[in-house]
Length: 176
Image 1 (cartoon, rainbow, N blue to C red):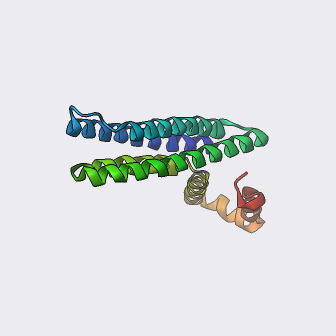
Image 2: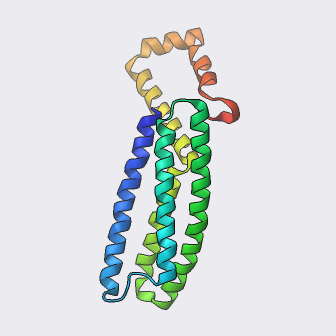
């Protein structure tokens, strides 16, 4: 289930990356023959995309790691990379706002770039991942109760559901 929700997250990131590329294409058409961004904005965007790429790799390692110690270090690395990317994103946001103020006709495309970057960072965030994992667990549990009502009633009588719920969360309420 961890792998499945992780793959769902990566799929969403892929779609958002495609939308981001489309925004770049539309902006390039609008600005032709001028460069897509000035040098400072371009450098900040390049750095941010590189940091997002690093975070995607760390996220993939996290969702495919089975050992808890390795998973913990992968989660810490991902969190650090997302914090770094968020700082770069904030710098880029200021630069894009300045550009939007200078070139008011492009404000929507510049805003779209920032929105899409934010979406990728949000998708990779560990809290978002944990929430999605719990939603998936709840969905599977509901489907199982509907499909196997006798087994569900037996589990409830034996108190198995409560024991499974206690085992489902670990220290700090995080999924084991």
